[in-house]
Length: 345
Picture 1: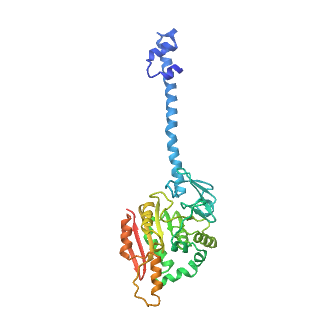
Picture 2: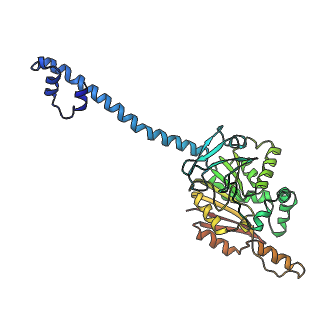
Picture 3: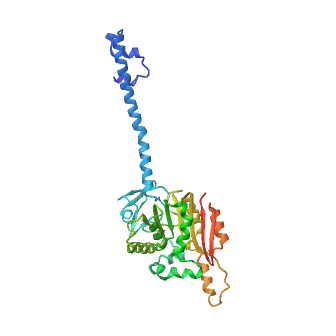
């Protein structure tokens, strides 16, 4: 049998019969019985072996796709999808009891306190980075505590219509993204992240901010609410200029009162365009740049604010979005308030 299997392609049916049954080399009856048995045995072995090899990569690909459907996160170093070890589910409890690892660069990520740290500097022991003053300001425990307790309420003086109305306006822009993944970048204390999660309009909501204390404050608000602890909501610390998601994997990105705070707005907007899928929507609000025709007594204070933050004219915001790859730019303006929307082609 070993000889027949290894050289069946080169031996004739007659020579096979003569090799195995020389005594009956001229018996047609014996030949007819042996030939189909030998060929069927060899064929059966070959088909089974080849089918097993062909099925392995298909199963592996299917498993990888299932992992990506559950966990949208990617390594912020190389943008490869992260492998998760821990309980299943996309909610605060499950995600923050899990560990994540990048197969490509072997970097590991885990939760800190109440949020998942997906910054490049996560886990570093000796290296530190100095951020601009406006970034460090919002990492302050005091500012994080006051943000929804008086700080944000002052925005109405500049024309902001208020969180409820801003949320409704954003929802109108996000209609095409319903049922998908929404990322609320620079979410602060999660004022809008919680509204998006409670709306039930999205399969997953990621509240993302660079400030550890803002995320802790968001966690406290979630726990106080009582209805969001099991919602499809994740708290993630990340840099808006290095978003921890694969390219083309996000359906909607929201950035409330954020553009003027970013150290490098062009890098951030380009990164948002990268992670959005084709047809994905980006919606943001910010303060428009205003002139300094103000009373002389407060003019130095206004100049200091403008120097510390990036305030833009409406034309600059449109140019920024289109230059970073967006189309269908639209905006709504009220005094110094602007809500702008753009779409990835």
